[in-house]
Each structure stands twice: as C-alpha cells, then as structure tokens.
Length: 232
Ligand code: DC
Figure 1 (tube, rainbow, N blue to C red):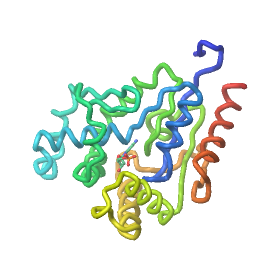
Figure 2: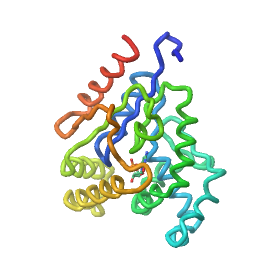
Figure 3: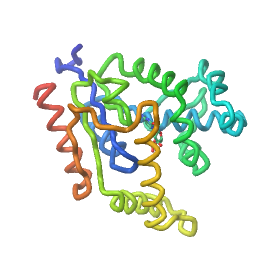
C-alpha cells in the first residue's frame, strides 16, 4: 500500500517497559511521518475503567472468565489526542491511580488480550501507523516493517515520571522517586512474567536504550530507521 505522496506505508511497532519513552516518541514520530498514533496502553486502561465502572473487579478476581461479557460491544476510539470509551471522553479518567493499580491484572486476562489484539489489528489494517505497547512487535503485528524495543534504566524512568507528575502540579500527593522506581520495577516484573503476551523483545526489534538520550535524539533515531524503509 502507498500513501498519497507515493511513499510506502508501513507499520512501526514500539514496545518496551513502563515510562521508557514509548508514547512520547511514538506520538512525535507519527506526527512527523503523517501517520496515525495508537496508544495500546490506553486501550487496556479503557477496559480496566469499564470493569471498575461495572463494579466487576472483585468478581473477576474470583472468576476471570466473566470479563468476556464486557468485551463484545466495546468501542474504543482515538480522536486526535483524546481517547473515547463507548463515545465518552475518558482521556483523564484512564490515567487515574485507581485504573493504574488494576491495569496489570486486567491486561493479563486472555479474553481481554484477544479482543484488543483484534481491535488493534483492525485499526492498523490500512498501515501508516505507529503503535506502542508491550506486545505489538511480538503478537499484534509481528510483520511490522520496523520494530523498536525501547528500554531505560528504572531509576531514570522514575525520575522522568516524577518530573511529569510535578509538571501536572499535584504537589503534596506526588510519590517520591524511590517509590516510583519500586512501582516501575513491580510493573516490569508483572508485564514480563505474565502468561499471555509477556513483554519481550522480538528478535528483529532494534533495541534503543534511552537512559541518556533526549526525546529529540530518540525520535530522530527511529525516524531515520523508518526513512530507510519507506524511502526519502
Ligand atoms: O503503557 P501504559 O503504562 O499506559 O500501559 C498500561 C498497562 O497496560 C501496562 O501495565 C501493561 C499493559 N499493556 C499491555 O499489557 N499490552 C500492551 N500492548 C500495552 C499495555
């Protein structure tokens, strides 16, 4: 498939652990290439919000097969920077702590992964997308022309998250860098050790360690790799 200006349209899969710079890199890169950015973490967060909203969290801990009933009529859309669940803008709600605490559990459930994989494959079918997550290069689009695996030192990731939270201004409630590092290490373990679609690097994925890189450098590196594939 080709774009209007004759360039080949590709799929760029960006995977990596929490706070490694995936979404910032993916968003800017998509803008530069004129591609659509799809944040699959936001999709797992939206499902988690739906579960919490339906009051089903405790029941799912006892019997997780009940989650299937919540998935068949699920509608998740991206409009610009905003995320919509069943037509409602949930962009802020999905970032709340109540959702962050439970999203690892919800994203470990097979019916959830199967349904979101299906939706993600539909969203990317026209190609010309940058999709970020944990299993995009390994499971959702193993045929993606460019696969990137972003990593960064856990302490550095905690510092970045802290700076991000401080900028948002919730001063008294912000966890310390040390607490954030603990949280990040725990999420890494949960994501790497789960049975279904664990976080791991596809053998073809280009590993990029962003610990000492600026955003501009990260984006530049991936952009150059993409241009080698689509042509100048
Ligand atoms: O990228 P994020 O922190 O917003 O992701 C939220 C959670 O969703 C994270 O704990 C892992 C999970 N996730 C996943 O399992 N697979 C993906 N493709 C994306 C996110």
